[in-house]
Image (cartoon, rainbow, N blue to C red; front, side):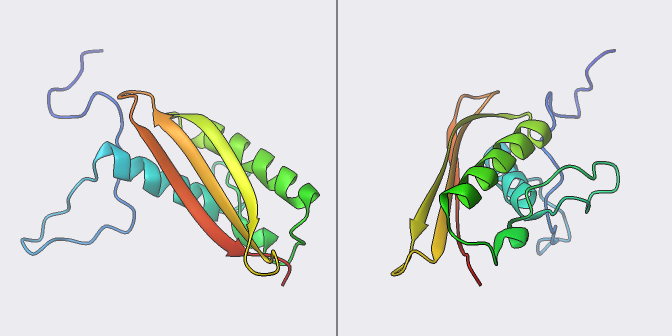
Length: 133
């Protein structure tokens, strides 16, 4: 199969929530932005939401009423590693860190660091959420 001169060599990804610019054109995100958007979508997607991949996604909302315990953080970390590994082949995970935050430890900060395979560029996505209701 011959590569098309009109398409990128590796998939970049359709822009999430595309909005036309002032000329009515849709702009493709760059590789870095596309990867960050995809990782955020993976974190927010609940298992069972994707029709052809029902076992995929992390589903951060499923953890909102769970305690901010070591068991919860371990389970969530494992789910993040598995979901990103299965759904985002453009990156190599460097670290997935989960740390309690907030005055009483009621918040959890998730920091995902990665390298983009094609360019070697480092990247990171960080999310803070409340746990324990």
